[in-house]
Length: 129
Image 1: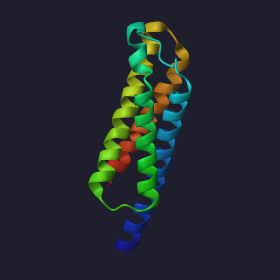
Image 2: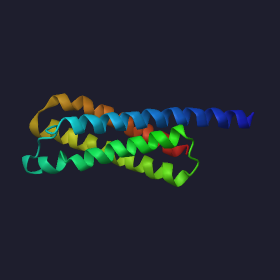
Image 3: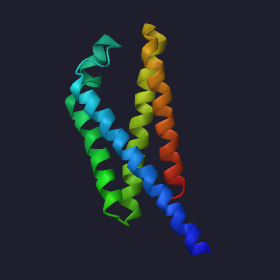
C-alpha cells in the first residue's frame, strides 16, 4: 500500500512539474515577444527587458520539462531548476507589484496573483521532492 501511495504522489509531482515548466516557457516566450513589458523605473527598463533574461527563463522551463518527461532521477538537477523557477516567479511578482504600486498600472495586479500561485506550486513540488 505504501508503494502505491508513493507512486501516486510521484505521479502528481510530475504533473505539477510539467505545469510549472510549461508556465515558465510561456512566461519567457511572452517576455521575449514583448520587448517593452516592464517600464518602471524608466532607468532600469533596459535591464528588465533584456533578451538574455527572457532566454534564461525559457531555458529553465524547457530543461525542467525535458527532465520531467524523460524521468531524470537526479534530485540536485530538479532542485536547482525548481529554485530557479521559484526565484524567477517571485522576482516577477515583485516587479509586477512595484509596477502596480508605483505607476498605478492595475492591469499587472493579476500577474502578481498568477506569479504567486506559480511560486506556491514550486514550493509544493520542492517540499515533496
